[in-house]
Amino acid sequence: MSDVTRLPDLALRTCGGSVVAASDESFAERQALIRPGAPAFQPGTFGARGQVYDGWETRRRREPGHDWAMVRLGMPGVIRGVVVDTAWFTGNYPPFASVEACEVDGYPSVAELQEAEWVEIVPKSPLGGDASHEFTVGDGRRFTHVRLNIFPDGGVSRLRVHGEVVPGLALYEGMTVDLAALENGAVVTGCSDEFYSSPANVIAPGLPRHQAEGWETARRRDGGNDWLVVRLAVPGVARVAELDTTNLVYNAPGAACLMGADVRGGPPGEDAEWFELLPRTRLQPDTRHRFRLPGDRVATHVRLDIYPDGGMGRLRLHGTPHGR
Image (cartoon, rainbow, N blue to C red; front, side, top):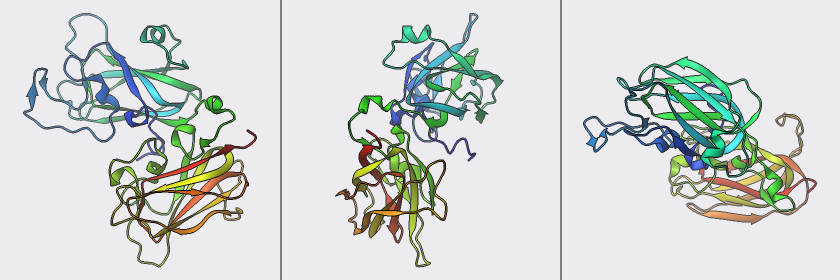
């Protein structure tokens, strides 16, 4: 996994993304482009549209032009990389693709998006069959939508749009927000272990459906404990913490604590001054725990320690952005 693909997928369906329109989806539906997980395939499974594919596939073009699919990002932001995956498409993949992006806030119609100012972020590039193609994006502007163009037709299993979340938090002026939410701009900057699943899952939208949609570490045998650090969406005062061990029945941590730090301009170093938000507290398996947090110190980063190891489905930190 490259540094770019470790960034959040801004287009993911489970983060609010949607394929709002496509030129054609005769063989396989457009929404499959942004499904979570790797594409699956079972040969010899035929339906009314032909072989069933876990991806988007258009008909064979007999006229000039090319096919396209337009995606509303579930989390607007700065795009750092795009992955166009043609997994399982071998005799029916597009030989070329390009990607465009635009910024249109609010809730634009497809017609309004068609008239928007689109910027090419991935030039027309060759594709191979049954392969993942990663493209680096150098444009530092914020975007809300992308358009995948394929030339002239064919099938793409997944489109991943990796980048940094840049939300519009003005809507919540004067209100509390989840300071640790990925969709609000928070990011996991470090962790002790991610053997079974990524620590980034703990700040994802929604509830975890199973263990793999949380963070789970290997079993520790050294007497230490596991931890992760979250850079908050904005500096703020955390008022309520939610530690969710949902789906973790036999592998939940026995206890956890939360520490905060106010560090501007980068991740906390070894000399960072950490202060207590939640003392070491016993946890139960498969349970959503909510704790009121005392104090009014501003934090930019929060460290979650779990004892000794195990998993966490979600971490929520509801609080007040600094200065609001």
